[in-house]
Length: 388
Ligand code: FES
Ligand SMILES: [Fe+2]
View (cartoon, rainbow, N blue to C red):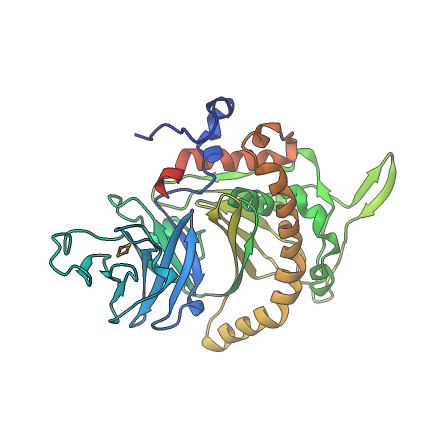
């Protein structure tokens, strides 16, 4: 049974019964897989620090496999990362009194300053399950007594498909992870992107918004499968002009590509524990995945990966080059940077718990409420300050 939520004002929680655990999940959800680094960022023998859902973590690759330990000695709580000491390939020693732990299991295997302690072999520092997939390192932010769910339940459908080549890059964004999710999935925020260089680069069409009854989202809630909300853009009735008092003040962009390729994004979907998939973006035949990974209450790790189906290694290489030569400057730094800007502004408001009750959402925001409710129904636990 879920422990009572004591770290968010109960009066606020009672006002949003259908998504109260989402309101409480400032630090994210427990017992889910989150990407924490790109694989290329952890070389053999390298020790790397990261923070996930408020927990400081150390990662090390040993003989190709990545291990993760909590960056906090069980003896007096000091971070190992203050002064890294590793005397053997498979162990890490705390610099303060020499408590030594195995990377593979977290087991306390020696104490250099007290080798006959009864604690040796009986205690351990928290070790996190790690899995690498598609060039990203995933960590299961779980309770010790919970067996990790299969990774495929915590990533959007298609992400793990063998023929999907993926390349990506990451940013640290100073906003809560929920603000990231809701910015990415927000159907009305297309409004901010009309000035992006991506519009011309891909000769895409970009409306200024869509009509109030456009939202026809589909919920994916099948046991053993990823849980998400799916917004098919075919249902959107696009608006191409923005008017103030009857005068057109802003125009969307309508393009027809000479090669006949469609220039519209076809769908956006948002999946637990906080990952967006955008289909036919940044161009036809591409799928963009965006993770909003909780770091702290006011920071998230923003991992963007672009996928393309390929049939051979050369096509995968071409996709990788296209990512760095084209999508990174034009789309990530020229389109998603507009999202980052919006999130920084949103955070000034949503950084307060009470703000979530002060917002005034409209018809087109309906999918966002569906997302909050889905999270409430299917999360596997809320990360609490007392976990830290
Ligand atoms: S605090 Fe780490 S060994 Fe004492
Ligand atoms: Fe956006």
